[in-house]
Length: 107
Image (cartoon, rainbow, N blue to C red; front, side):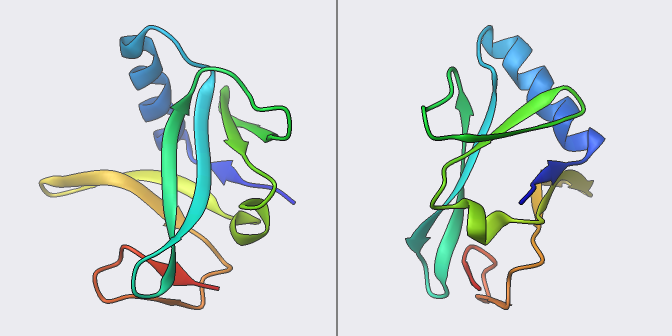
């Protein structure tokens, strides 16, 4: 099982961690919510949990809890800018369908 991130996403995370002044990486997971069933959750991590799966890409750590990993396996996290919009983009091969607003998905 593996999760990766693009250089653009890693640069964005590293820049934020530097401004924040602390942190070891990005915690990525899923939670039950929305009209399609699941949504991504992101937060900056200061320390790993004892059961975290840790992946590293471009010098940045991605920390994923064991319950979320099956839903995220094979996913690539990207950071994009399109016009005035910018943000993380989840390239997840496990997603079968997304809701119309793009906030939730199901596998």
